[in-house]
Image (tube, rainbow, N blue to C red; front, side, top):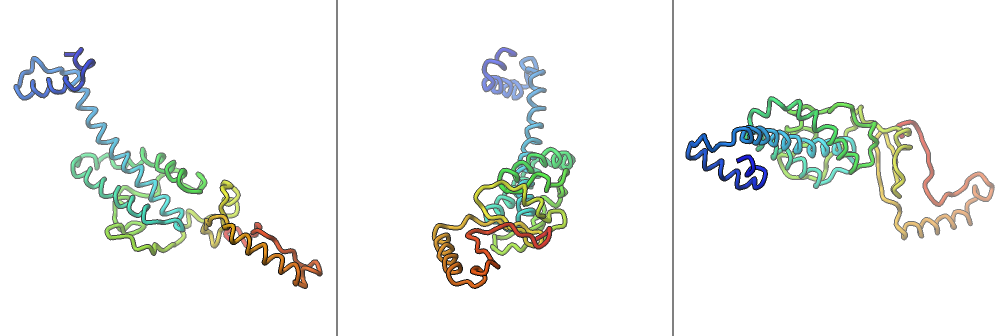
Length: 232
């Protein structure tokens, strides 16, 4: 029986199922049966952690980069919450492992958020800022019990206020980054049409501007770094 387990796992499962149906204990492969049953339990836990990883990653994106909230993020959060509730209904005892699952899923959730945003790693807390109950609650951060309304309002959180130091850490990907009252705004690089308009405007200013002729002002053809405060 051991050789069948190693050579043809499917055939082994069918043989074990038949032996169980016939209550023929002499044909049961006890060591491997015990191993496979334990593995089934671990698989259910891994599925819980997998759902939590995606959910936490999208909650972080939603919470820490509100200017990029979208219907896609909204639907992913709703889908993962529903998947987790279904999974827990089929495996009630997994609720006792909720805290451990949150811990196991958080690091991978942060990695997911890092891959899909411009947020530096140091902006995220070392431990998960959400409880298991909050992660599953439809009304936490944004109500996912209904449809996407497209007007997800922004309210800055004290733990994720952006500063000029954070701005310096962002990668140069051809995008325009601004911080206004601690909020990060990301806009695409200007289109060629905008560049032509800007060049024309600069020429007009240079030709007619009194301040330019006197040397009191210098027109720039692109935005420059300027800080009113650490938060703006």
